[in-house]
Image 1: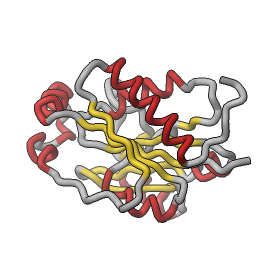
Image 2: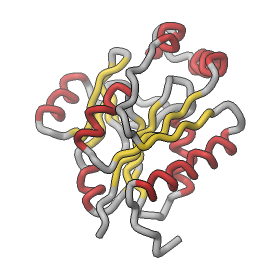
Image 3: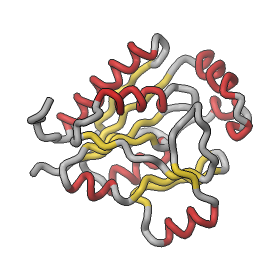
Image 4: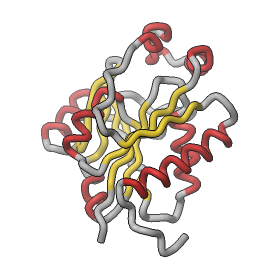
Length: 194
């Protein structure tokens, strides 16, 4: 069986990554080749945003020390982790798609050779409006978040960019096509059921 791979979804807060991931999960439902793991975050779940598992800071650190995360990082005063179980999914040929921080791409590329990135973005005024509409105190200073400049991507990265400035349906279709294209590029076996 061909080994699977990892597609990292990145982009600024307010770009719509979680909405696009939900659209892709619905599209690929029933296709075991595509795996959308739940992240672990040291923040309570919120019904209108990402569906994630919550841990306290101490619990998160204990899981991390036991090797329970394939990827982990800190951002905006919170800790985030991708469960180590995704390694098994990839070993079985699965294509794992997960939202991460741009700051960990270089390390992830060293750890996972079959890796690609989908960058989701939108114009600054749209990002500002979306973050303001959340009304979530944990988002901190919106202007500061939008002013952050990410580190450059590693050379040779399999990367596609989606500008999410139209309808969710249009962006969702572009996102699904990007997943399919990158999955083929990093060697997803052909479907026998779709």
